[in-house]
Length: 110
Length: 220
Image (cartoon, rainbow over all chains, first blue to last red; front, side, top):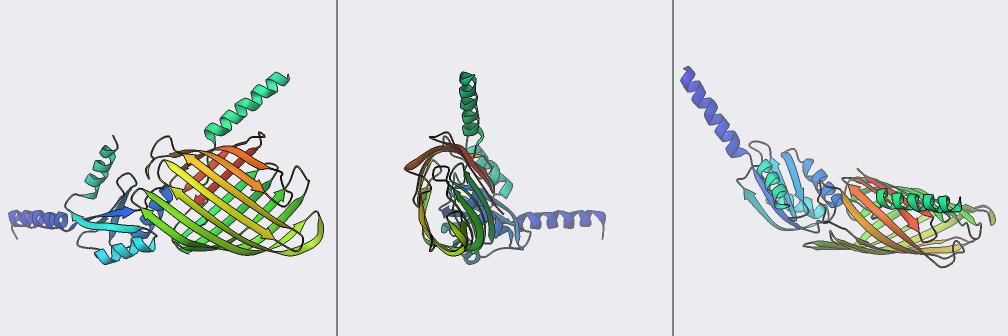
């Protein structure tokens, strides 16, 4: 394979990786203390597909990013948070990377 | 000299209030979590507990409590096992409310009777919490053939700012506690400062009599 073609394949693979990385946001009731967040984070990080977790008490939000090419079904996420003792009001898939969500939540405080 | 001692006592009280931390003593923190707690109230009680919660609504474990009255000189030591149950939870958009109940059995000794006695324990706690307001009432009853005593506690807390998961939470708490069973006469009032971050929680302060109260809790 020519070097140019190899580069094109590499770029395509990178693009696929970005495209496959998913961020899932959940609106959650009952998030009022660090222990709430700690329990939820522990629960979600136990999933093999989980890459990172962000919990915002301010925004009543739990966000999960999944590993490349992997996903966690909405029902599974809803069950995880219900089993942790909280109420899920909504689940949505976001294009935003989790770091951007983290940054946005940080900025929202100011 | 007495002025110096009073000043020193005042400084210690201020430091205790500034640096102390408190435990929002929920008997169940989160599913698959272990909770270790310790509480000390000068002239009344000393307690250590450890619980494991397989779910968010149930935990089991054990502990030891020593009631040590500096008024009646009565001491009671109880080593116990206990099950905690979350009877009801309300998850609101910016608040949470809970009702916990628990029951346990222990072995009690004391300086007003010989040997050990089987002791039974039941309790209930209701709490309401936002990120700015915290309120709880708790009643904990111990009964044995030699004594019956109840500890009723009410806490009201205010946070000067709204914390988040990654920031330190600070609470100013007023506590009223009533002991039956000749441990103390009258309601014991205390002012506490509670700090927590992540899985660590510390609470400390002074009673109206100037006696220190400290509590610590760790969840992991």
